[in-house]
Amino acid sequence: MENPRRVPILIVSGFLGSGKTTLVSHLLGEARREGVRMAVISNEFGELGIDAALLGGAGADYVEIEGGCVCCELSDELIETLEMLRARVDPDRIVIETSGVALPHDTQLHLWREPVSGWRGEDLVLVVVNAEQVQAGRELCGTFEDQVSSADLLVLNKIDLVSEAALPAIEARVREFEPDAPILRCVRGEFDPALLFLPEPGRIPERSRAERAARPHGHEAFEAEEIRVPDGLEPEALLARIRALAPLRAKGFVRTTRGLEVLQGVAERLELSSAGPALPEAHVGRVVLIRRVPSG
Ligand SMILES: [Zn+2]
Image 1 (cartoon, rainbow, N blue to C red):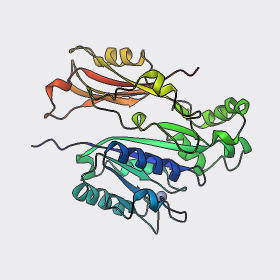
Image 2 (tube, protein in one colour):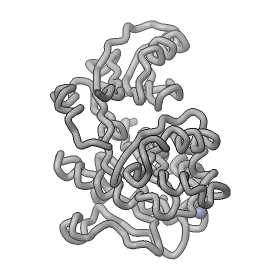
Image 3 (cartoon, rainbow, N blue to C red):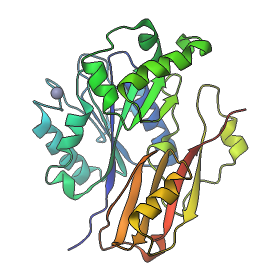
Image 4 (cartoon, rainbow, N blue to C red):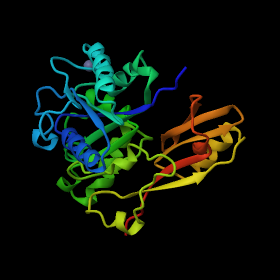
């Protein structure tokens, strides 16, 4: 049987006013600039959707699901919309922007349903947190807690609205809900998409460390690196070896003692799963790592 192209899916969650829509708009702008086909499903009812001007008119790659929540009552519609986008747009990546009340983990579970499970690539939950809301201690329970605790990556947004000295305490507060997920600081939702959608081996953009570090202040800088992994390692030994390099993200194809596997994940949460059969042999043993560029 043919091995379908795997499409990574990013779930963007966050409380009302966290800046999700701005972040998704920014990702969409970057994707268009890079010539990457990114489809967006927005379930952000009750708020203004993505800026129509950025979309350059209504595109087939942007769908709003309204009248309910995709994590529960409209989950069938979510599956149908994903299938429709794949058939009509054939996107390289998909972003699902959930409403302020949706539970990201529940949304993620729907991606494991047929037929989406047959072509879905890595799925990641990014939760946008309003730094100012955390500092003020507003509504830090219930939905907020559920969202933050199911994050693979946390984006602390609007850090320009709080003092730099307050950031450690704000992050410590967030850590009470989610001890593991990396926390990334950000202003106005400007975020490096390379951290969310990893480049293929051999296709890491040629951008120097200095160039990346020179990005606007408040925008953390990341660098991509490719490493070689020998065949035939024990899975646990391989994972330990990658974790020792402390990547924020890792992705690649490796041949362990169990056979051909996909290595992927966020920070400490790296995992190996069985790879499809139709894999280019040239990709095996190559792992792309994304790391923070130290500031200063
Ligand atoms: Zn729901």
